[in-house]
Length: 334
Ligand code: G4F
Image 1: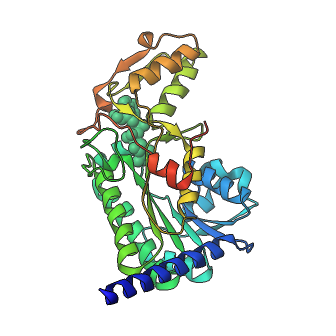
Image 2: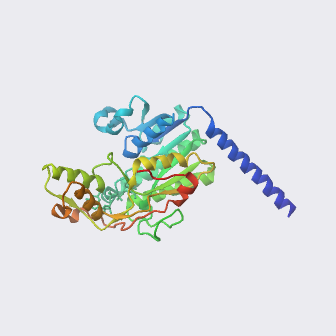
Image 3: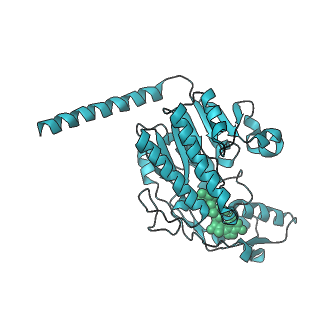
């Protein structure tokens, strides 16, 4: 009994010391260095802006082809190019990641790069699994070798909940992925958790629900709807062909969600968090609202096209972000 109590006190003392050490480290005025994989994407560009506004030195990992064609491939970060440092590397190549990590002492790493289009993952599941799973594993393995103190964020996804086991979905909801993309994200999630537990690294998973904005790629449904509706209004298109109009999503704004990523890496302990608005709407409702804003009736223009249906659909997503609100103090602002 006395032993047990003594040991518990000793462990509590150590935990408190470790937490204090973390806090002290978080509060220093030294410029922190962050590495973002996927910096040229929607989330990467908003995150880079956010970290720069907080005084970070921001680095991005980009594919060499991007360096060769900056006008087309760096469109979302053109305004940041003189403030970020870009490094050519591929998340499919362990040596190239190892090389970049051996050159810089990053404090935080945000691993956002992936094949992120769910429909495409049905077309080419092999490359989706390869890029998304191995890419995450290479990042984690290289960090373990070279920078085990670097804090690591993995971009998990609500697609992992798939055929949902409970409504709303929270951190404890079991996964049931419905696409190769969803499967790859479950694997990335588990790898991240495993590195946290096996090697005591500060690795966190963000379980982010759909997040959109003007920088969203045109293949995703929100941007496809808004851009085509605008073209129809201008007389440049006559119809909008979509797949399943009944699917429901919890849509937030990407700029809000990158703030949550950063907050997750500032905590005393690594953990996993759902980030969502708690509201769900169907694709049909989205169409109705988007067209109405242009004084148009979506029913006159939207055509259902079987080609845009998926072999297995995620029918309903709605997240419960109460843990993030409570622990991170995170709120969606937009
Ligand atoms: O906009 P979506 O392609 O996004 P999806 O599949 O929900 O995935 C996005 O959010 C995930 C988070 O949950 C991310 F992890 C992922 O990387 C990505 O950012 O499709 C939304 C819904 C689907 O149910 C789809 O079947 O819209 C439906 N939909 C109907 N017609 C369509 C279309 N989706 C697309 N892309 N194109 C259509 O024509």
